[in-house]
Length: 212
Figure 1 (cartoon, rainbow, N blue to C red):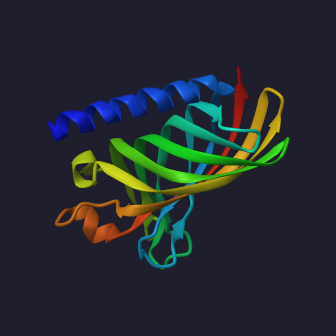
Figure 2 (cartoon, helix red, strand yellow):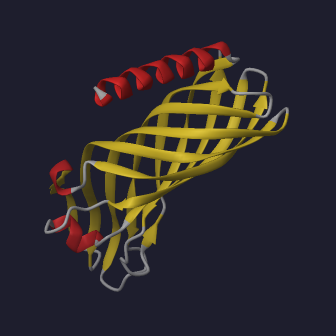
């Protein structure tokens, strides 16, 4: 009986909260832009930011004039680039390509009418992964391959914290976010762990959005 009462109370609260949010001023839109990503792994002096992209949709629900709630759903290409230029015997690069479905949940704070700060958690689901190497040894032997590492060598879920700023110009929005991963990218006891250890995702996102 207590469980049934708790369930009824939860449903009432959800309906009330949902109705309240729908009653607030809200906008929807699409966004996309550049990812500059890395993984916090110790891979020597050759680690660089890997360029990628993100694309998706968002909605912003205004709680009041100053505070809002913004969930997003994005496809996001992240990973790591290891550049061997300057190494003694090897020249070229290796890229870890990780493709995620990403759900950030931002609390937005409007500092002024055209500028806001946003912060909140995120969760990502790994859709696919691969590792590409394009390099030469002693400027003679070429290495051009897709490593056998794939999605099964990496953790399916990533989660962490995200924060950023946004500038609003009527229907146009420009911004930058930084996501700090808190979950290990590579699976234990897999070849990926030997390369990345307990490294975690770090991503800078620069974007433009259009609101409807």
